Length: 275
Ligand code: KIV
Image: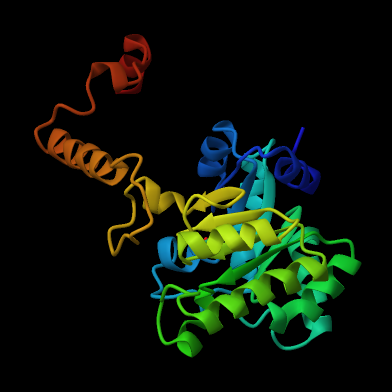
């Protein structure tokens, strides 16, 4: 049975830590789902790790829908959350509701995520009123990279902490079922988590969150352009894959692959008749 948003609400009440990972395709959705995560995020980070852009700005609704469909097909237990890409909700409240609806109707996600606090509270409220569960995203919001002047830790001075707490409250009051908080100091995160009744899911926000999320390319060592400080590498799968590819290349070249066990054998008589 697939998890619903109530699993997130109950986890906050009982103190069980929530786990989320990203996935963008069928095969990895199967792997992530089988690990027992509560939620899978089809993040707009696909712009970086799948499509090779330098940021998430160019990701489109069609990109997210295409990848969400594959992730839904590959998972059966986790709640699938689809990210709303840049400019799919900022323009107006009706635009936000319409695009959130597409992510459920066409992508078959169970919830959507959008970036921003007080400034998108009206959008969150309207999407929730359309019966679409919303996950907020505050702190470092990568879609605002140009306005923020780079990918920087947020909540580092008194004014920024006040803004972060107000953003968290705004997202909660607008009806979001949980909120991702990216790149904020761990002590600030403690205050934020304690001040909210909805679960906080941290990335680069330390241990005082109700749950954690990571981009799987980072935690498996599959993305070598950069690794954020907050990432723990649980495997060096990139190195392993590179070695496997190199072995294939050298075995084809030295004629040890394909070996007899990789070949189909035809009937000798059939061949004799043909030639
Ligand atoms: O797009 C994404 O993967 C995200 C996570 C970093 C939370 O938003």
